[in-house]
Length: 297
Image (cartoon, rainbow, N blue to C red; front, top):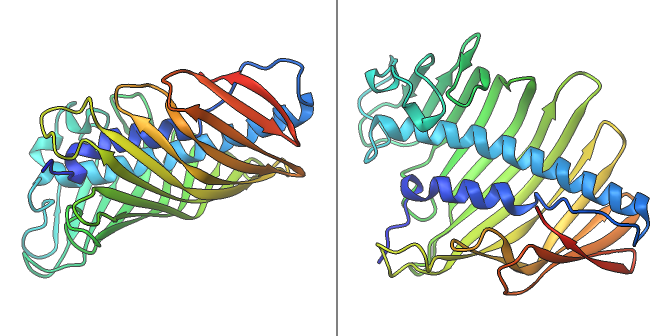
């Protein structure tokens, strides 16, 4: 049985979530131009929010695990340190060792455990992004165990010019040896200034539907993505979406190969249909009853 741990799957989950709603298209004059533009803008705002939260939580989980992959670095009583393993540019592939990590627990085997990553007044990663403030993650147990979760919150945290607020929960939702993770954003908010912001919430479940038995071969891995979300921005736009037919993502294909998202943007309603399983960048966008084929990019 392939071991579906948060350590060896996190980067793949991040990739899947990052591409989930980045579905901007090459536009033509079919459908109403205003409807299509508004729909695409809402999808892009949703994708920006999704990427920001996934990126920040990815950082937090990976940094904690780099301390000790087996125990997530949670040993002994309250500890405050900067790990020697974090002193070089290889940490997490992105974030350099200019932060401190605090682990709060009472005993080696006691949960919940809180890990606080403090970027202080600024920490530039290998990706060139400037991170400030704190990311706090509370673990109910090891994430490789079904039912356990990690809840991440932020304190005066920002990535470059984007301030990040809200709660991000990852839960191991695996059942009957079928690997799955549930990801929830509660009261999310990204703000660039007092007058420019995105508010956002969502629930996603990613379940492996093929490939769990082939530990050395990821080419046959297939995931099914379900969930819903909603948001608004400072420009007065609101949107909501629901995955009404699970999105199928194969590791051997860049694109989502099938599934349907239904959405609402202000007064416009519609859907995005990814097709019947072919690996291509085509999808059918329907807005207010008018449809056309689009090219995803």
